[in-house]
Length: 215
Image (cartoon, rainbow, N blue to C red; front, side):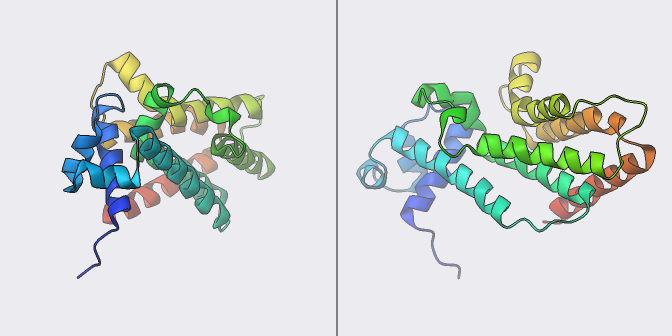
């Protein structure tokens, strides 16, 4: 039998789920305690306030990104690019309340943090696009501004769920909706690539998607 998760970890997981489903403002500590099966006093022993809980979730998301970056093992450009994209979309999905509700619990923007994983994520994407250029995979008939392309692709990945809420009116966003964001990202990137590279990138995405479906 697998060991029972520590109480603090169970609180964090329940809090993340409820914040994602209901939003930060609409979720109470008593609801989180009920979901975990503990008293509210036990919960506040670990996290005295709701803000303490959400700031820990934010820190955990940054640590997850930092750990993944430290453990990267370079592969082909198409596999590295797809891995980066899927990780970014998955991290955003798992913590979708953070971008949506951040103004409710702190006035400090991501860009002002001493170690901004947002900036690191942008720089990694820019580096991948530089590799694509170095390997001669961009179309020769296009004048591509790499920094502008990086911004466009990063915005799609980072703010796709904002688009779904604001433009499509979706209150409940499913993973299939998030997958549409992945396809939207590729719709920006692939026309910039030579035909052989487009095939390689599409094949890499298909391989990665099948691995995810297989668990």
